[in-house]
Length: 149
Image 1 (cartoon, rainbow, N blue to C red):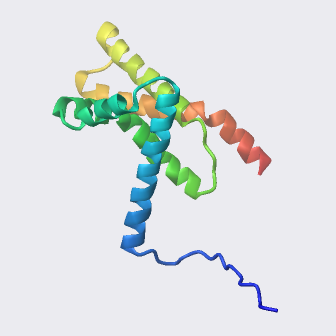
Image 2: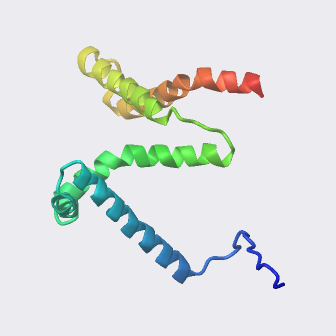
Image 3: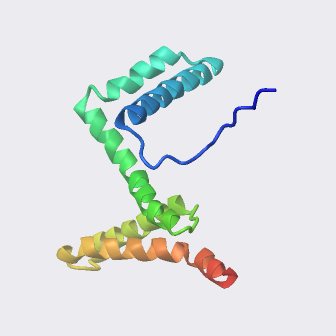
């Protein structure tokens, strides 16, 4: 009787650049294929949708708008990566962004209509207010997490 071959699954310590490039390209193409199937199932032309998405990269003003709209979420993801590396789960980042925006907008409105601060201090006050509002928004879950541990 022949021995049954065994499969050993182990973490690679080093991944070659070629394997990384091929893997990334494969999954990018797979994502386009799956999203195209979903678009077609919804009755939306996948080709036209991909053309519209590609046109964003052809126009500098559209590309700038896309970057400006994606920047807050990218910064939130960067901040969350620190928490995730420390094994803390934070699913309230979007709410923290909104609370920070509300606080910064409040500082602007106070400055505009009440002359709340000198113009030089408006931006630092906006930063401070947004940091405090975002932090206070996650204070209750943080306290509950600390009591649990």
